[in-house]
View 1 (cartoon, rainbow, N blue to C red):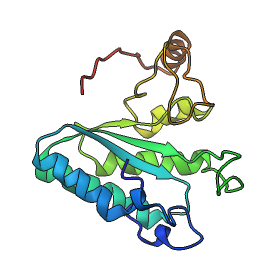
View 2: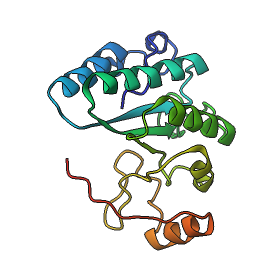
View 3: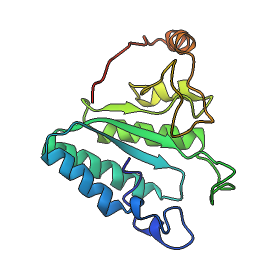
View 4: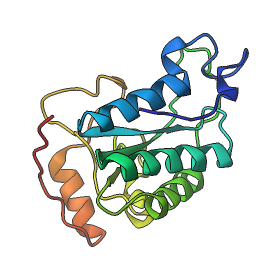
Amino acid sequence: LLETTSRRLTRKGVAHYACPDNVPLQRLRTLERAGAAGVPFTTGLLIGIGESWAERVDALEAIAASHARHGHIQEVIIQNFQRKPDIAMAEHPEPSLADMLRTLAVARLILPGEISLHAPPNLSARHLAYLSAGINDWGGISPVTIDFINPGHAWPEIEALEQACAGAGYRLEERLTIY
């Protein structure tokens, strides 16, 4: 994931301090190089790590601009920060539902329609509300594997997710994506 374009978050005391793999310039270069090489790409934002609203919009605009140049972005994930007991941000607040919905809605407006918009259904019990904000993809949920990024959060049962989507007026479709 791009996560953010904020260089401010690499300063001492904030989320990406001393994390060379999270330097925005490097992640933007990867995004551009993948596009120049014609590699289909999934990217996104991690929200709730101390970024400002303007920094979120900047990151979404950077993704849209890269896609406009190369046409390679297939999916954008808006992932909500999750506290974990063994991390430096263990006491940091998670984004609210309103914050997630606002970010998803703005992402849907900024990103071209051909880009799938995804928010993980296993990181919040409120995930069905994300449908009204413009998502059209639940991502790679699986009945046989764990979420390797967030192993403490089980994927929803596919049948239960299908029923919940139907109850909200949507149809869950299976789609095979080959990378």
